[in-house]
Length: 139
Ligand code: CO
Image (cartoon, rainbow, N blue to C red; front, side, top):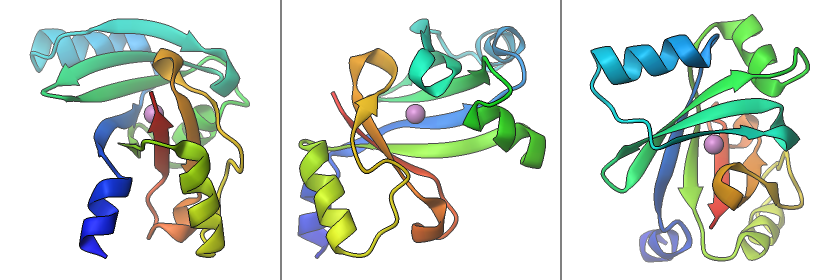
């Protein structure tokens, strides 16, 4: 099982952090904490604006809601700023979604949708991952 898992999940792609203000968060993470900002983009499908900060071959993804209906806005309203999700890179996202569904895993997205950086992404419901919101991403 461990070997299969290692092959299905290629690496941790990024860790998502929900923030009130992207400007403030970028300032804290770059000036104070010393990370570099690779790029900032709007992900309209998810009603967020994101900043990507590389850490080795992984990244931090700072997420700001662009709409009160954004999942990130709802998350912050409920729990405040903080760790929002962990994203794993997969080779074939459609195949992984089917595999997870067959295993009884609850998916937020049953079809891939456009994420940051032109990736195809799908979210696994936290109820099926011990309280962690998991994102799958195919470059
Ligand atoms: Co993400």
